Length: 279
Image: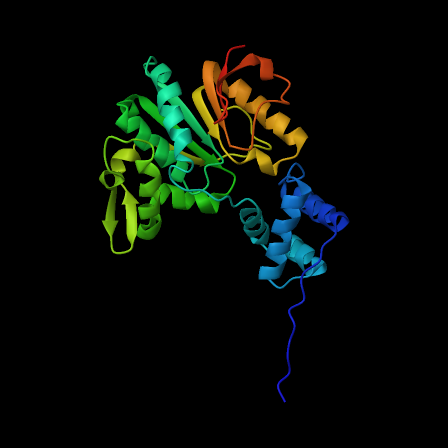
């Protein structure tokens, strides 16, 4: 007789989620309390299911197992990304923003929440095509050190890069994406010429402060995971990190509508949420 086993779904209440948030903050200094509870609950539940843990076991590992908190943080902060995601946004960037950036002798850009680096290299390629890369420097930051290591390597599966090429074509480029990477077996490595003016480093939008003054900041599809108070705090960070007349680019489901300093920004492209700091 064959015994059938049934997979039991992990259940966690919002009260139990608050316990996890407190453990992570008090013992490890990571404050994730500003994440939307629904998103955070989904990610914590996924970690528990993958590691076959109940609530007691999860808290025990966070308290007693060295390195688990780092793994935990990496898993709850992973974001989906791709090169030239939303090609129309990149066309808008090229048409509405780059002519202004071209007036600066030096251009500093910040890709916040850059994940595995695809957006950073997309910006680098766009700048290269516009003849602006040599006087530009791009900072790519994320709280997740695991994804930053992949970003620094700049190696992606060839299958994915072929998909990215379809996005790139929709931006009306001057060349083929294949000119910017070297293919070997099943992998594509971003050319070193695109890496020389790029720096990837760890930075927390939750707890770290201004570290430079930028002409352009992109933070797309990150704020949607934050609650209203944290969104306000992060937008303050961006406001103070932008130079006068600098540009801020948000994701398709994000905007400055409810931001207290919204009047200090001009809408450059409403459809693609591109703003310019004017106050």
